Length: 97
Image (tube, rainbow, N blue to C red; front, side, top):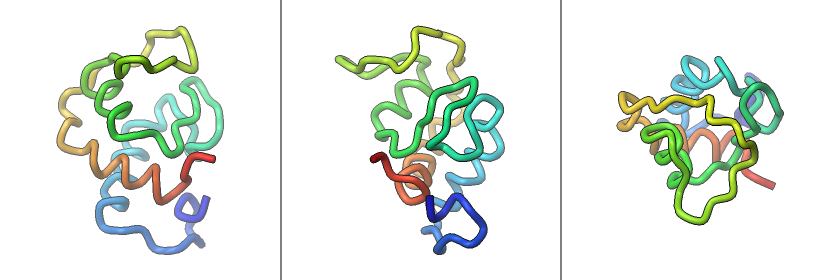
């Protein structure tokens, strides 16, 4: 969880932008530490494909098995241009195990 704490190593520019998106939008439902559970499931290390499908289209990539049956997350197409940055943050901050 290096980049998730102030004492962690420096993030890339893209990951810093993604961190801003995460802490501005995503923590309304997801834990401030993306490896932990909250209203929304842990999303640490989420793939770009999954992020684009869920965030932009409120859908899932073909063949993906959701962690939860809930359909509470709305589409947020205004974040389409931030998907690469968000993916960078979730990969650098807290890669999937």
